[in-house]
Length: 105
Image (cartoon, rainbow, N blue to C red):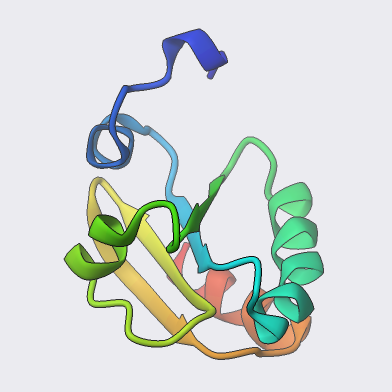
């Protein structure tokens, strides 16, 4: 998907994507978020063309954190056709994250 063709809102992106969307809810000040970030990037690279990955900074988009009930970060959600099909909260190692994503795909 080209950047210019992306929907204007997060919700529209979730609905419009033909691919499952992996969303990393994070914040710059969050140490565990920084620990998980390389695993998320690796999962995104390994699933290129099969998965869309999005990072949502909860300090910049608090309405999205509220809408999806994010009470602790990092929280990773996987959406399929706009519906959440996987949710992980906390810093998990790559192997556990990748296994959960594979199971949900």
